[in-house]
Length: 369
Image 1 (tube, rainbow, N blue to C red):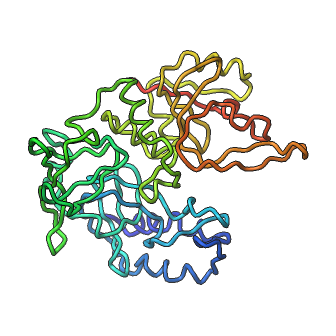
Image 2: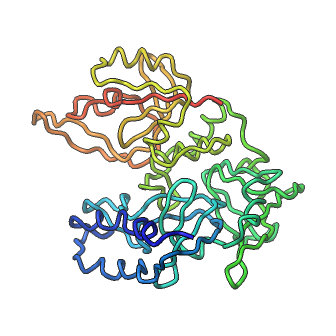
């Protein structure tokens, strides 16, 4: 049971912050304060009791966790629908959830996952007792998704889609046929209870039995599978932001990382913090000791290190934009939008008021097996 005071704080912890300034919809129209009234009503705060039951569930497919029980897009700056401030994070399929509350319209549940908490579309979860979730969470054999997205079907050889599953998702593997893998997929009965149903993946390089070996080659291969994937804040629309890229790549080798970039930088067992006073040459000297696919981070962004070539340090990262100086106007920058996973060197931002990516680095992290 969860006390009313705790549940109330969970439900309200971000909603007031969101309302303190003007927000815009996906078409760049300013939203009046009245826009939030039905959203606040849908929080269903009147249904909170002194003690509130906790239910358990699994995500049936990749889904979104939201600050409000709505799919509406809100942005802070007009013209940037990729930055939906209501998006907490994407959740992969087969994530365990502790479900704490239901929206007034009955379409959303407020849940805590191992990574985040937020409102999840109710149709994307299936409820069950903790013992019923175990076969999904600790299967004897696993089929791991290697492609950015792989589609399962309910019947082998048909096109009746059972769901799309993102990179790093591990499903219980039941059988290996000549042309198909058979897995157990979470589904629900008409009354919303968890049930096992067989699903099928074609035998291809999109999936494999077991996690990839924890090697530089495996990690690089997975990172480059996501090259040019569009940027979406919080992993919305089945794409990535910078930390989702890192999360998905490392999930492919069975390493579970935190969701946000700051926490990911703390997760390694070989971390170096960089002082602002370090010169570019001193920073490059530190990078020279890093293995490929180490994490490079500064507040708000995280990157995967690829190595050095001809004196330049290269990274693969999911970046929205960087700054370039305006030649005719001293101390003025312009924004260059990238909006996808790219390979670049650390000189991006050279000459801008913010400095290069190299100048801004605050943390180097090595993840050792």
